Each structure stands twice: as structure tokens, then as C-alpha cells.
Image (cartoon, one colour):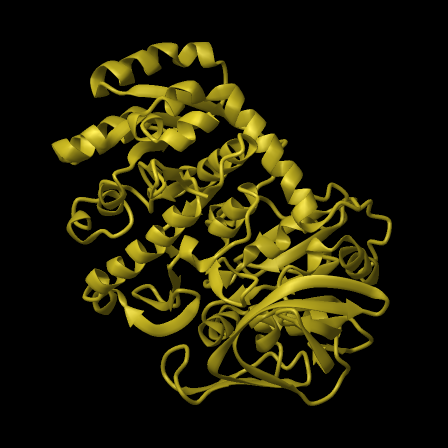
Length: 514
């Protein structure tokens, strides 16, 4: 807890991690820093003033925040808190988002409407940052997208304006795998003003493949042109599994297993507004079967199961499913004895209809469902955000719920018995629906595959009972990955030089700890 120096409590210093663009690795680099400093005995906290993502999670208080900051909090070995992500934008259309402020839904807003409110929201973000700086020894500030979007910079509340408020040094991350790393870094510097360039302490080049010796001339060129140090070049890795924030991980799902191939496969329908695709990480890491995200309609007969994932715009995605032909394909697959699982929005789509009388997702109205399950859903406030403990037969699990509206079961059986929500015992509580000889299932609970026993039960139900599943689960499993990430980071980044940055070195408490 920072710091009583000479009888006066000071605010903790901040270190900012910005990027040359989206999906360059800011979130993972920030998580690596979190684990590194936590291992040094520093009470470190992550912070991102505004996050735009449909991957969100729930805090112990039952509030909603971006999963990237939850991952970073886990890496820092502290509980997640909405101060770490005070503003969350969850895109519902190409020009609109649901706005979540301090963990609670505020409104649906177009980009133009939101732009006019940024001054007030900047104050909200600053207050959240101040609380973190009072509670922790160091705050790691993640930026958003490119920090040099010249048309957005005058109204930016995430990148340099926040760094200036906190007087934070900036480390700029670039992704060499995308190509054009020299233009990324030098071009970013050219777009910045003098004061902003001076705030950048140096660079980290992410996702390098090949012989690093072949890039040494490139490093020297960058340092000469920019007048800044390259702190490190992070090689591409395959042995570390950290939750991805952005949908880049499912944009290129690869080739579908052809019929007759020995390796079994599970399909996830890649709907336009897919959310919480991190649900599928525990399936994707299994070697005994393939996991495919499918966008184009194709024959499903050779898949062991098909999953309808969560959605940030259920009615839009349901219309898309029917218009593209996926609806007919899914019904045929189910009629032929196939296994279908719906999660959250996908569960809602599997019913007879989804009704939105108040226009929660857009224009009020009713959308015909897939009629795979005997349920009906009404979208309405308030939003449910809970950490949920539940059981499937004799197996207990833990997950979380984030959804608007309620679903009524008209037949079938419940999928799960709910034991607790937000640490409060539930009496006679149920979730989900199971029908058609338990081959068609739906649930509101995200993260259900994080529990090895539950993952094993579901895989067994679709004929994959021989899959070897690690008994290490949940946070314990993720914790091992954070350790691997920190070791990889320490090996390839000049952390001693970063620790000598003036904003860190002048802090008396950090100087004593480091």
C-alpha cells in the first residue's frame, strides 16, 4: 500500500503500455508486467480507462468489467475491481455500443452520442485511477488501439491524455508479425507531438519469428531514427496460453476437418456479434479433437457437437443465422441426432422466440427462434451479472452470468442446479434447458468448461469420453500460465533499464523494494 514517505502519503507512480495499433499485444504485455512486479513484492494493479470489448467478466461484487483487466488482475495476484476498467463499451452494432460505467449498464449509445460525453467520463476514469494509486504501489496503464490516431487524439481519454494526467512513462508495443514494424514505430512517433514523443521511454517488439540476430540491424535502425531504446523483442510462443481479448484468434479458423477424418471435431458458429469466446479456450487446448469457428454455412454431419456462443446482439445474430441458411442447417443437424449446446445469447436463440418489447438491443420487436429448445426469452432490464456456483448431477462447477432478460422453460429439464449467486445461497434455483434425449442443451453460464469435471461430463455426453483432461483448473491453471509468461518476458526484455525509468526510480517506496 503506497506510501507513507516523510509522513505524507503519496500517489503511486504509473507506467503506461501503449500500442502502434489494435491487437499488437498490449494486454498480454501488461499482464506480463503485472506478474513480474507482483513477484518482486510490489502491490501492482492494472488499469484501462476505457475498454471496447464483448469479452467481459464479473467481479466478486457482481459488477461487470473487461476480461483483459480481470486477466491482468489475476496476473497481479489481486481481485478484479471495476476501478481497473471504469468504462466498458460493448459493441452492439457497427456504430453503437452498450455503455457500462463502473460495472453497471448506463445506456446504449451511438459513437456520436458517446463522443459528447467524454469529458464527464474522463473525470470518472481519473477518479478510478486515483483510487488505485492510493491503494497500490504501482499502476500499469494499458492504452487502446493506436495511440496516434490523429483524428481521435483531441478527445482521447485512454492514451496520452490519461498518461499526462498520471505523469506516466510510456512503453510502445509493436507487432512485427503483422509486418511493417519499422513503419509502425517510426510512423507512430511522427504522428505525435513533441511532448508526447518525450513521454515515450522506449519500445517492445512483439511476436518475432526466426533468428533474432537477423533483426539486430533493424533494432539499431529503430533506435537511431527514433532516439528511443528498444527494450526487448518478444519471440512468438506456443507453450503459453493466455486469454485473448480480441477476436483475432477466431478470425482465421482454418480448414474444417473433412468427413471421414480420424480426428473428431467440435464446431462453434462464428456469429457477427460473438461475445465471451474465451469460453472455448479450455476446449481449444485439447489435442484429441479439433475446434473450429465456422462462419460460412457448411455440412455439420461430421462434427461431434455444434455450439452457439454468446452474443451482444441476440436478435441481429439470430436473423443472420436464419438468413444465411445456418438455421436450416442447425435444425437438420439436430433432427439427425446431433448435439447442440447454446451459451447465453446462443441459448436464447435456441428457443421459440426472443422478444424485446423495450428495445434493449435496438428496435423493439420479436424474432423467431430456432425452436431447438422449449423456451422463450424476453429481453429486459436489469442486467444479470453474477458469479455462479452450480452442479450438473454430482459434479460442481463455477462460472459467471452476464445477460439481459429472462428465459422461461416450457418443457424439457433444467441443465444445472444453481447453488450460489454472488456468494448468496440459492434455494430451488435452476439454469438452462435440456431436451431431445439430452442432445440439445442451453445455459446462461459462461466459463463452464473451466471446471475439468464439467468439461469431462459434456465431452462424454458427445462421445468424447476418452479425452485426457488436466485436473488443474480455473485460476490455478491460469496462474501457471502467468508464471510462464513472466519467465518468457524476463528472458527477452531489458527490465533493469525499465526499472531505471525516472518515474519509477524517483518513487522512494519502489526504489526500496526494487
